[in-house]
Length: 205
Ligand SMILES: [Fe+2]
Image 1 (cartoon, rainbow, N blue to C red):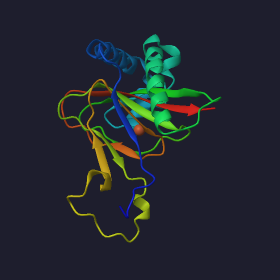
Image 2: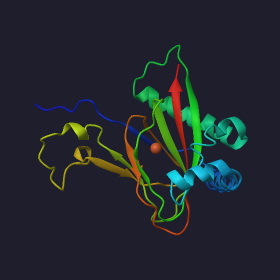
Image 3: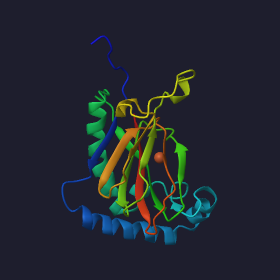
Image 4: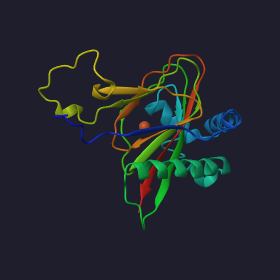
Protein backbone atom coordinates (compact mmCIF):
# COMPACT_ATOMS: atom_id res chain seq x y z
CA UNK A 1 0.00 0.00 0.00
CA UNK A 2 1.40 3.42 -0.93
CA UNK A 3 -0.53 5.10 1.89
CA UNK A 4 -0.24 4.20 5.56
CA UNK A 5 -1.95 5.69 8.63
CA UNK A 6 0.18 7.34 11.34
CA UNK A 7 -0.41 9.06 14.69
CA UNK A 8 -3.60 7.29 15.65
CA UNK A 9 -5.86 8.35 18.54
CA UNK A 10 -6.93 5.54 20.86
CA UNK A 11 -10.06 5.22 22.98
CA UNK A 12 -10.59 2.36 25.45
CA UNK A 13 -14.06 0.98 26.12
CA UNK A 14 -14.58 -2.02 28.40
CA UNK A 15 -17.00 -3.23 31.08
CA UNK A 16 -15.67 -2.26 34.52
CA UNK A 17 -15.82 -5.90 35.67
CA UNK A 18 -17.13 -9.25 34.49
CA UNK A 19 -20.10 -9.55 36.88
CA UNK A 20 -22.04 -7.76 39.60
CA UNK A 21 -22.49 -4.55 37.63
CA UNK A 22 -26.23 -4.17 38.23
CA UNK A 23 -25.88 -4.29 42.02
CA UNK A 24 -22.79 -2.07 41.98
CA UNK A 25 -24.56 0.54 39.87
CA UNK A 26 -27.64 0.56 42.10
CA UNK A 27 -25.45 1.27 45.12
CA UNK A 28 -23.41 3.85 43.24
CA UNK A 29 -26.49 5.69 41.97
CA UNK A 30 -27.79 5.92 45.51
CA UNK A 31 -24.45 7.21 46.78
CA UNK A 32 -24.24 9.78 43.96
CA UNK A 33 -27.71 11.11 44.81
CA UNK A 34 -26.87 11.22 48.51
CA UNK A 35 -23.79 13.21 47.65
CA UNK A 36 -25.88 15.71 45.69
CA UNK A 37 -28.21 16.14 48.67
CA UNK A 38 -25.25 16.74 50.97
CA UNK A 39 -23.00 18.87 48.76
CA UNK A 40 -24.39 22.41 49.05
CA UNK A 41 -21.29 24.02 47.51
CA UNK A 42 -21.43 21.62 44.57
CA UNK A 43 -25.10 22.33 43.94
CA UNK A 44 -24.36 26.06 44.02
CA UNK A 45 -21.45 25.66 41.57
CA UNK A 46 -23.49 23.42 39.29
CA UNK A 47 -26.32 25.95 39.14
CA UNK A 48 -23.95 28.37 37.45
CA UNK A 49 -21.72 26.02 35.49
CA UNK A 50 -23.74 22.86 34.82
CA UNK A 51 -27.28 24.21 34.38
CA UNK A 52 -29.99 21.85 35.56
CA UNK A 53 -27.54 19.17 36.64
CA UNK A 54 -25.19 18.35 39.49
CA UNK A 55 -21.46 17.73 39.38
CA UNK A 56 -19.06 17.48 42.30
CA UNK A 57 -16.19 18.51 39.98
CA UNK A 58 -15.52 21.82 41.75
CA UNK A 59 -16.50 20.86 45.30
CA UNK A 60 -15.82 17.19 46.01
CA UNK A 61 -13.41 15.95 43.38
CA UNK A 62 -11.36 13.63 45.58
CA UNK A 63 -14.18 11.29 46.48
CA UNK A 64 -11.82 8.28 46.48
CA UNK A 65 -10.19 9.75 49.63
CA UNK A 66 -13.41 10.08 51.61
CA UNK A 67 -15.63 7.20 50.60
CA UNK A 68 -14.88 3.47 50.61
CA UNK A 69 -17.24 3.03 47.64
CA UNK A 70 -15.18 5.39 45.51
CA UNK A 71 -11.89 4.06 46.90
CA UNK A 72 -12.97 0.64 45.57
CA UNK A 73 -13.71 2.22 42.21
CA UNK A 74 -10.27 3.82 42.23
CA UNK A 75 -8.66 0.35 42.43
CA UNK A 76 -10.75 -0.91 39.55
CA UNK A 77 -10.10 2.16 37.37
CA UNK A 78 -6.37 1.90 38.05
CA UNK A 79 -6.22 -1.64 36.66
CA UNK A 80 -7.92 -0.54 33.43
CA UNK A 81 -5.72 2.56 33.09
CA UNK A 82 -2.62 0.37 33.46
CA UNK A 83 -3.83 -1.81 30.58
CA UNK A 84 -4.59 1.24 28.44
CA UNK A 85 -1.25 2.91 29.20
CA UNK A 86 0.56 -0.33 28.31
CA UNK A 87 -1.25 -0.54 25.00
CA UNK A 88 -0.29 3.11 24.32
CA UNK A 89 3.31 1.91 24.90
CA UNK A 90 3.93 4.46 27.64
CA UNK A 91 7.10 3.63 29.55
CA UNK A 92 5.96 3.52 33.17
CA UNK A 93 8.88 1.43 34.45
CA UNK A 94 10.07 3.06 37.68
CA UNK A 95 7.16 5.46 37.50
CA UNK A 96 3.76 5.33 39.11
CA UNK A 97 0.31 6.38 38.05
CA UNK A 98 -2.14 7.97 40.41
CA UNK A 99 -5.80 8.86 40.32
CA UNK A 100 -5.86 12.57 41.18
CA UNK A 101 -9.53 13.53 40.84
CA UNK A 102 -12.76 11.58 40.88
CA UNK A 103 -16.14 13.26 40.72
CA UNK A 104 -19.82 12.56 40.08
CA UNK A 105 -22.08 13.91 37.33
CA UNK A 106 -25.87 13.75 37.40
CA UNK A 107 -27.69 14.94 34.30
CA UNK A 108 -31.45 15.49 34.39
CA UNK A 109 -33.21 16.49 31.16
CA UNK A 110 -31.69 19.50 29.30
CA UNK A 111 -28.31 19.34 31.06
CA UNK A 112 -25.37 19.25 28.63
CA UNK A 113 -21.61 19.25 28.94
CA UNK A 114 -19.91 21.37 26.29
CA UNK A 115 -16.63 20.59 24.52
CA UNK A 116 -13.68 20.33 26.92
CA UNK A 117 -10.50 18.48 27.79
CA UNK A 118 -8.95 17.51 31.13
CA UNK A 119 -5.88 19.59 32.07
CA UNK A 120 -3.13 18.40 34.44
CA UNK A 121 -3.60 14.72 33.73
CA UNK A 122 -2.57 12.20 31.08
CA UNK A 123 -5.42 9.68 31.03
CA UNK A 124 -9.01 10.49 31.90
CA UNK A 125 -12.18 8.50 31.81
CA UNK A 126 -15.80 8.07 32.64
CA UNK A 127 -17.68 5.19 34.18
CA UNK A 128 -21.42 4.96 33.52
CA UNK A 129 -23.69 4.31 36.49
CA UNK A 130 -27.18 5.02 35.12
CA UNK A 131 -27.90 5.42 31.43
CA UNK A 132 -31.62 5.50 30.61
CA UNK A 133 -32.53 4.46 27.07
CA UNK A 134 -32.01 7.34 24.66
CA UNK A 135 -29.47 9.20 26.80
CA UNK A 136 -26.61 11.10 25.17
CA UNK A 137 -23.32 9.40 24.44
CA UNK A 138 -19.77 10.70 24.77
CA UNK A 139 -18.73 12.55 21.61
CA UNK A 140 -15.03 12.89 20.77
CA UNK A 141 -13.55 15.35 18.29
CA UNK A 142 -10.65 14.70 15.91
CA UNK A 143 -7.73 16.45 17.68
CA UNK A 144 -6.48 17.76 14.31
CA UNK A 145 -9.70 19.57 13.49
CA UNK A 146 -8.17 23.04 13.83
CA UNK A 147 -5.39 22.06 11.39
CA UNK A 148 -7.68 21.16 8.51
CA UNK A 149 -7.47 24.81 7.47
CA UNK A 150 -8.20 24.50 3.77
CA UNK A 151 -9.46 20.93 3.55
CA UNK A 152 -12.61 20.33 1.53
CA UNK A 153 -15.49 18.75 3.43
CA UNK A 154 -15.49 14.97 3.87
CA UNK A 155 -17.96 12.77 2.04
CA UNK A 156 -20.95 11.81 4.12
CA UNK A 157 -20.05 8.12 3.87
CA UNK A 158 -16.41 8.22 5.06
CA UNK A 159 -14.81 5.29 6.81
CA UNK A 160 -15.28 5.58 10.58
CA UNK A 161 -11.64 6.48 11.21
CA UNK A 162 -11.91 9.40 8.77
CA UNK A 163 -14.86 11.04 10.49
CA UNK A 164 -14.25 14.25 12.43
CA UNK A 165 -16.31 13.00 15.40
CA UNK A 166 -17.10 9.71 17.01
CA UNK A 167 -19.81 9.19 19.63
CA UNK A 168 -19.54 6.33 22.09
CA UNK A 169 -22.93 5.36 23.52
CA UNK A 170 -23.17 5.76 27.30
CA UNK A 171 -23.89 2.28 28.70
CA UNK A 172 -24.17 1.52 32.42
CA UNK A 173 -21.27 -0.67 33.51
CA UNK A 174 -18.96 0.50 30.72
CA UNK A 175 -15.75 2.38 31.27
CA UNK A 176 -14.34 4.73 28.63
CA UNK A 177 -10.72 5.89 28.81
CA UNK A 178 -8.97 8.44 26.60
CA UNK A 179 -5.85 10.57 26.65
CA UNK A 180 -6.71 13.72 28.59
CA UNK A 181 -5.97 16.10 25.70
CA UNK A 182 -8.74 14.62 23.56
CA UNK A 183 -11.65 17.03 23.43
CA UNK A 184 -15.13 15.66 24.09
CA UNK A 185 -18.64 16.67 24.98
CA UNK A 186 -22.03 15.33 26.03
CA UNK A 187 -25.05 16.63 24.14
CA UNK A 188 -28.10 17.76 26.09
CA UNK A 189 -29.77 14.91 27.94
CA UNK A 190 -33.27 14.43 26.56
CA UNK A 191 -35.02 11.70 28.53
CA UNK A 192 -36.79 12.06 31.91
CA UNK A 193 -34.62 9.67 33.97
CA UNK A 194 -31.28 10.93 35.23
CA UNK A 195 -28.02 9.98 33.50
CA UNK A 196 -25.33 9.34 36.12
CA UNK A 197 -21.60 8.95 35.59
CA UNK A 198 -18.35 9.07 37.53
CA UNK A 199 -15.41 10.83 35.88
CA UNK A 200 -11.74 10.83 36.84
CA UNK A 201 -8.21 11.89 35.97
CA UNK A 202 -4.90 10.07 36.28
CA UNK A 203 -1.45 11.60 36.48
CA UNK A 204 1.99 9.99 36.69
CA UNK A 205 5.25 10.68 38.52
FE1 LIG B 1 -14.79 15.24 30.36
